[in-house]
Image (cartoon, rainbow, N blue to C red; front, side, top):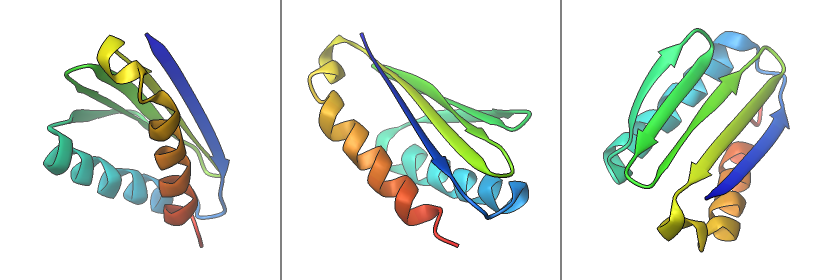
Length: 92
């Protein structure tokens, strides 16, 4: 099992960062059959072969992703996509 962690600082504030995380989760749900729920300021998500969380703070977003055996081979490209998406989404 591969574990990916990506952190990005931001200056959006908590509410705007939560809204961005919600938008991302909605997109993942429709494109990749991801189920998600909020637990405080942490968005927890799961799908077949992967699960993780997006922790949202007033000045930082941390994505943690656990990949199952089949998706582990794609870990490098998945991490790069997470980084690209966060960098794009968290621009003020």
